[in-house]
Image (cartoon, rainbow, N blue to C red; front, side):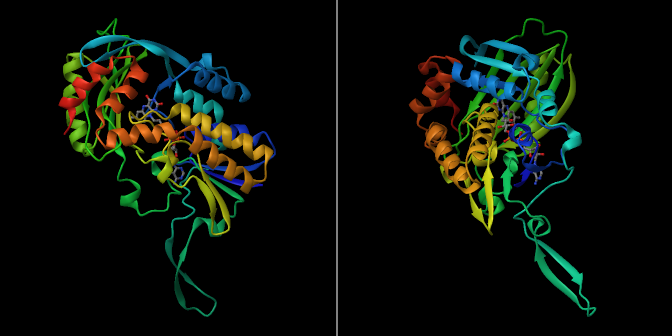
Length: 363
Ligand SMILES: Cc1cc2nc3c(=O)[nH]c(=O)nc-3n(C[C@H](O)[C@H](O)[C@H](O)COP(=O)(O)OP(=O)(O)OC[C@H]3O[C@@H](n4cnc5c(N)ncnc54)[C@H](O)[C@@H]3O)c2cc1C
């Protein structure tokens, strides 16, 4: 079976690794040089989550311990410290992704199989003809896997509909020797926008070696986010630190139930894994879901025919991740109790504290 994977981020790299050792003929596409650097935290909602990721990496002959650069035990929310009840690890995601699927195995370009391109060509008679063509006409795959994250290449709706729930992010990598002892995760400036499924906030995340991942996610434009974060980090670090690098991005806020998870399109099997199908929580976590969904799809494809595997995969995703949709709907509807309960399960901060923050957070 010939498989084409769109994207070699976390989910695409896991999927490629798990499938390529099993006799599948796979091409994986990605034009990005810094795959996976925008996010570093892996939050495990329970021990089972941690064991699954550990197991998946073991199947890929990797040891999760080799990628853990920090364990976070405390969170500071709006000025107060709390002990986190879950396991929160900072993993070296760049190294993990490279070890799963080395850059040299990747076709270094975008792949947009359902994007129609307008072409002109000269036919035998010498006439110039105009036509629409797609990548899929030039290369045939039995299965195309969308692992394109927030680009959501295989989601069919028009671009503005497709991205209307995405929250924009801006992130800096800061190097600072003067902040010894900052070993907790900071969450600040929580903001909810009615009708939108994602929670806006600012974070400071210690990732070891005097480095900090500082970022913010809001429904604002990149320019506003950048200026805001520059001021925020200057204030936080006292202006004595260096910005090593910076970038902007987006996180998919779509509901899973409204996403195209898999099916047949123009006689070709298509399926999505990871963030492309809405596997994100309202605070933008998607790493564990990316690993898990890639693993489940690979397992089903090894056992069943492709169309049967896709149906089983769709059912599995809808059944096992419906909670993410419920949480996003709470945020959309500004259901303060629902949101506070979700945040409490993550960070062990009392529901009443979050309720107070949320009441003043709406904008
Ligand atoms: C700033 C930020 C912070 C985050 N923090 C956290 C966190 O702390 N914890 C957490 O769990 N999650 C976090 N996330 C979310 C997490 O990064 C993603 O959910 C996760 O990486 C999803 O994996 P993925 O493989 O689905 O997509 P990605 O890892 O985004 O990979 C998608 C890949 O597809 C490629 N691509 C896109 N379009 C095409 C195309 N047409 N052709 C070929 N390739 C293409 C891209 O270049 C990219 O490499 C964060 C996200 C952001 C933006």
